Length: 117
Length: 116
Image 1 (cartoon, one colour):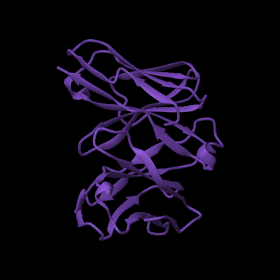
Image 2 (cartoon, rainbow over the protein chains, first blue to last red):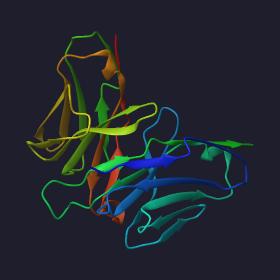
Image 3 (cartoon, chains in turn green, blue):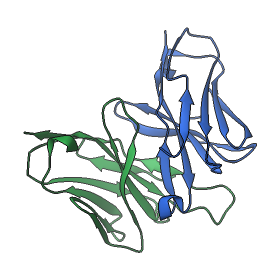
């Protein structure tokens, strides 16, 4: 099955600086890569995603890049703010909606981001 | 929040007792999932369902069973709870075209289970 590795496990940055979180995956059939933000005691929330036919996607201060050849994708947060402090998870999935059984998501182990005011 | 609720939200139980967690969704999504979240392990898939009475195992299914007799409800049962099953359990749904995009997965609020 798919194996998703995520680094670093913890990350501290000064407010206003950028943060980068990296993930690698093993299954070349994976073609959908979402990122989730989880605040303490809350559910994971989807913040951005990318599909394998796209190399980069931006949404305001966050962006995701994908390198299919190297099987890695990254989350970039610019101009970090204290409210960006949370645990971030990457995931990989194959699109299985053409079959009957749906698609499984494989998650990284998470990165705890702390933004220091 | 994609209309997903979980019950109970917190539960303390003793080793050896059966426990059932419920996931309920209001938007008729076909695909539903149960995950457990533990420090250092991220989210790990226990079981998932791709329709009424259609379920399959995930990577950590030992000691768990599921049932889906209605589209809106996906039940997770610990037949005989053990301390290693102390965790936070999240239900999720996945649907194509949700919010105008494809293949997204949305999570319920979670159930914190403690087995003593």
